[in-house]
Image (cartoon, rainbow, N blue to C red; front, side, top):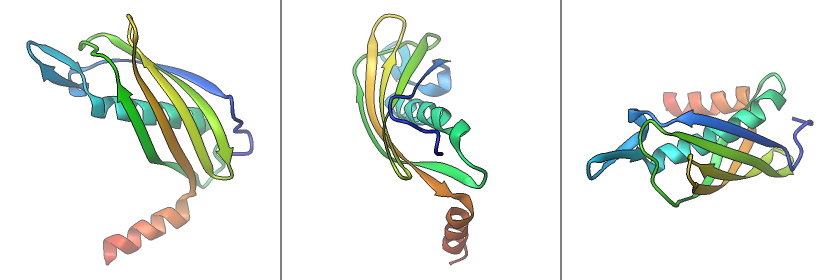
Length: 128
């Protein structure tokens, strides 16, 4: 975690599959919930190599703007920038593009968690 610094970037590309789409007229297009998941997972990919053993990460805030449609079968690209590191709180700006234009933008926040504490808390909730 000590190696995470504001200004770090990562680009992630993915093909839009049917599971990531919704129907619009006669077309299947990249859905907003799938864009949210793509942004979160892309930010998570930037962070993962920097975690210490026993650490994990969770998303806590997503503010998304879906600006244009992308057809099923086309590729989307997330350009992730880590904009802030405040102890365990990480903030990101993410831009999403297809082959033609920018189709989304996202402000995202993640927290680095101690997995033992996190899973212990979850277990306590499950067991009542």
